[in-house]
Image (cartoon, rainbow, N blue to C red):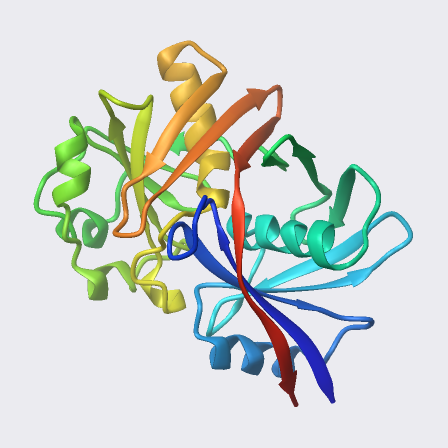
Length: 259
């Protein structure tokens, strides 16, 4: 069987920036173990698969080792493929997913993703989480991931977490964040138990970051940067129980695979 495969740099204005994702359009679902094997073979943080539905598409996301319930950058990458490679003529894409309906529309040069908000709540940090960082955070919250808030941007930039300790945590991953002079906030994201030691730009993390910083700063429109090695700028807006996450994407390659 021959399948189309694309690799897209999401939250990027040029290739080799942002977060690369693989995108595999399907006419019907493959067995789960086959999709998992394709994701492992791609060895990117996420591979997205989607099939057509009456309203749009049903989308699923796989890391190299497991399926996840939500992924922002691979959704953005999938929208890029649908708008640019699949002769899609509508202005908005509706994705059905394990996290409910997700909408993506193109506004000028940006893709705007409409995701459910996942507001984090304060929590008592697990011992392994605190031991993984050399600087104590000022706050610890949780939702889909743990979120550690630090005093300064430099605390986030200089962090070198103990990844084996992070692997023992019960949630998907760990977001670290702090206020910034050049942006409303900066962040990084680690999910080593999913073979993602540090994710370059994590769209789904902003469903947690945006409501936190909107409440803290008293503003609904936010500009942020994920300060990984590749890095990426993300704009987001909190609209009631939804978060709009905005970014660009660039195609890196398109080809086919044989399975």
